[in-house]
Image (cartoon, rainbow, N blue to C red):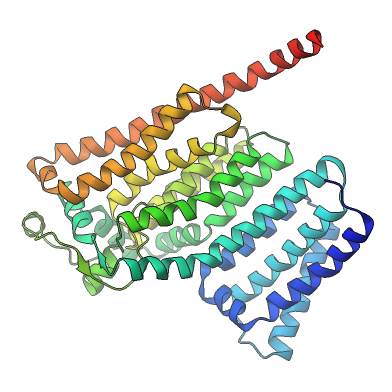
Length: 409
């Protein structure tokens, strides 16, 4: 859609006004400072913007805009200086620059910049909305099901979350690297989205939609199986003092009252990095390499931080497949897509049921829980690859269909 000149001028005046309002709002500033995901989401906009438009004028403009906002907030309004706040100013300035590029660009660049601006704006909005939705989930579910998840993890005879927590507590640089990746999740999503937008890939819109819908869909699943993570249940006992395997085997399983966000099951962090890895196909080696680094270190961080049980990560695989197949729009409703969609949703809900009513069965032998986890991950990998092959076949047939249509016309 082509914008008229008056519309472009009006939009260009509204953008800096909105940016100034957002930067000087104490409420929004506090959200950016105390919610690392929001500030990292804003920081990721810089990656998205400068990957699409790596020119000095944009970089200088973003720096100048962020400096102006920092001067207003720190010197005139006397807000407390915070690094996350400064990063947020850079992100806001980059968002404004993307908006102006979207309004004044033409041709393919206009489409690219509009999609990038929309993705950036909605991403930050989803991050900011997470807090009230988590509060709503906690209110609806005063009791959590952590004991069931802990019992399953212990049935593996290896308490992986506690072992990784001990590794984090022992090797601080390893822990710091993992947590840097953990909170920097929006960066890899921005990088993958920018890569596809830059090359005009048909995977750009499915990737953007998948990244955006993961959180709101995940909230629904959080309400189906509310859980916190071992650090909230065990407190100072995590990570050095887990129950013995014998104690865990005889643990009385019941919902329990506990405070905290019910955002453990399934692990959305795992789902997001898997989506980033799957959607990074077709991008450069270095972009795929960064995506894989995020996958590996996110696995470490989800466990080492005590935010998740091992089974949360396993269930994150079919949940990611569900979202991936749900957003595979170019493929149409093929057999591969329906199978992936059904398996992703079925395995996710199936694990919920098994953990809720049949977790004691996994204690019969350690082979059972390990086999169930391996079968889940393997099934997801196989179905995702079939879905990818279907997408590749569909893409290769499009030029033939276009050629036939032209010859007929």
